[in-house]
Image (tube, rainbow, N blue to C red):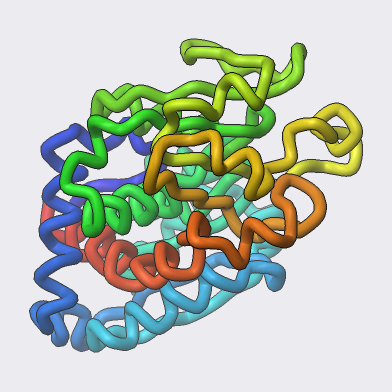
Length: 276
């Protein structure tokens, strides 16, 4: 078995194995993989896309889910005791919780795979899905120029992890004070977006909105990018904030289509972690 807590838990070769598994699942393989097995889920009530696709994906693999609110992990009982009991009944654990250290502790104690469905620090399932979806329409997706427009957060950090593992070029564009370490930085959005192939965004906090006022992605800005450039904002995105309303209905936006692949990629992650 293998855990997926951070993207760097995987090698480049293992990421490509997950993508191959997703292809095979799309073709109808593994439909009984979880027959007779139970996956325990910890999700906050606010989760929509990741929770829906994990629950549906497990069901389509023949498995059963038991769902708890993530808050139950914050009670007085030590996490090693919670996991100690779950080891008796769970065949895998999927958890969304803000504290990555808690998720790491769960993985240390578990005798079954623990899959991180998002923390405040990272979001490996989301970025793996985006890369898989991109690979289906761009065979040279690792040769393109990526631009992340946003603050240092879980989405941006995981894109940096992905670039380190897979070797593609990514630049962060942001105001001074929001930079991430170990990446190329640009401060002028009009200059930064030129010659880019993939534009990525993340939602902004109320405190960040004013600082990022001049960084909103519009159709006019996307026109400056390379021909056939794509815009993939991380959901939930907010029209009129990090992205303009018009750009969501433009030819550049691929968000809805990309997130279709959450289903098969997360199924592939389950199969991969349970068989390695």
